[in-house]
Length: 385
Image 1 (spheres, helix red, strand yellow):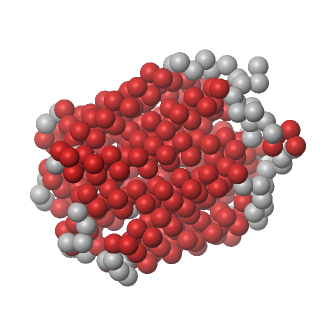
Image 2 (cartoon, rainbow, N blue to C red; image 1 turned 45 degrees about the vertical axis):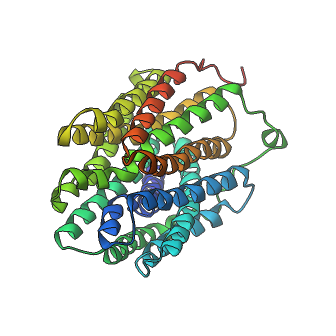
C-alpha cells in the first residue's frame, strides 16, 4: 500500500513538473514576454499574433502526430521536454523574428508531445493505483507554471530586465524543473493496443466534443496570449501590470482544486457547460466592463475556468467514449490546438482592420458561450452503447 502511495505521488509530481516546464513556462511565458519584446522594439501587437500562431501550428502538428503514434511514446515525451527547454533558452540569444518564430514552433511541437503523452501516462498509472484525486491534481501543472512565470515576470519587471535576459531566466527555471523529474519519466509508455482498438470507430459524441473543445481553445487563447499586454495598456506601471499573469495562474490552480473537491456532486456535462459559459462572460468582461475592473474580472474568470475546462472535457470524453485514452486525448488536443491556432490569426486581423483587439475578444467570448450551450446538445450516452 505504501509502495503504491509513493509511486502515485512520484507519478503525480512528475506529471505536474513536466507540465510546468513545457506548458506553464515553455509555452505561456510568451504572454508576459510580449509587452517586454514590444518595449524592446522588435515586436508589434500584430506580429505578436503571428509569433503566437507559430507556437500553435507546432502544437497542432505535435498533437496530430501523437494521435497517430503507435510506439516510442517515452522517447517523444523526453524529446518534447528537452526541445522545449532548449528553445526557451535559445530565445534569449537572438531578436531575429524568423528565428523566434522557429523557436515558438519547436516549443509547440515539443509541448504537444510532452503534454499528451505525460497526461495519458499519469492518468493510466494513477487510475491503476486507484488515486483519482492525484490524477486530477496533475492538471494543476500548467497553472503552477503560469503562476511561477508570472511571479518571475513581476520580479524581472521590478529589476528592468530586457526580453533576452527574461528568456534566459525562464529557460533556466524550466531546465531545473526538467532535471528534477527526468529520472522519474517512464522508460516505456506504449499503451496496449489490440487490432480492434486500432480500427475502433470514433463516435458522434466524441466528434461533437472535439468541435466544442476547439471553440474552447479559440475562446481562451486571446486573453491568455494578450493579457499581459492588455494589462500594460491599462496600467502604465510595469510592476502593477505584471501582477495579472500570476493572478491568472493562481485562478487556474483554484479552478482545478474546485473540480477535485466538488466534481463528484455535479454532472460532468452540466459542469463543463457552465464552465465554458462562465469563461465566455469573463473574456467579454475585458471589453464590456471598463478600466481595471473588467481586466481583473477577465483574469479571474478566464483563469478559473481555463484548466477546469480541460479537466472536465477529458473526464466527459471518458464518459461518452470507450476508445483508448491516448487516442482520445490526442484527438481532443488536436481540436483545441486548431482553435488556439485560429485565435492569434484573428487577433492580427482585428488589429489590422479595426486597430484593436476588442472585436476579436468579443468573438472569442461568443464562441465560448456558444460552445457551452453546444455541450448540452451532446447526449452523454457512451458511443459503444
